[in-house]
Length: 215
Image (cartoon, rainbow, N blue to C red; front, side, top):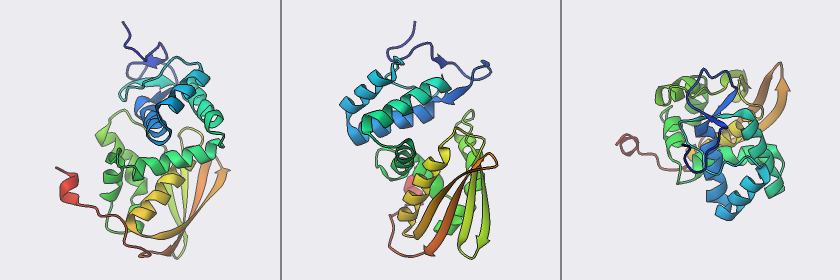
């Protein structure tokens, strides 16, 4: 028997032969919509998507087609381009008080925004330590000049680079850094993001208590 809110679009574990999106990602989209726009907006999105799933379970995998339909429905419901929505989701994952886990994971990287940037290539591996079957896109950071970087995002769902722009922007605020971010589009099968450090200590940033984070 299936639980309420699930359909055959969910598959247990991996190795099913289906292209799947991890439920943790779809749960993040669900929480973003409900926390930001309210339950009625989320219900409208579910109706638009016509997929029959209203509540995503973090430890299940779901068909990619369901994820695509869900994001298309959100874009239509909010009247915003998908790229803008994906960036907003990235910002939400770091800045909203209801979801602190990702912020803690990212802040462990170091005391400065540049430390955080230099740790990005290790993020997929660190995420797998927490959730063994969560496969994040590959992240490759390249310094192109003093304080200027290009982040390449590859091997993940299309548009994940826009989520990373939101995360990068929110983390800059978190560290109190002033940065310029520019999504350059897709080149050689990877999304590219230009990152320019304008001022490392532009503002005070948010308080981060390492001791409290590991309690």
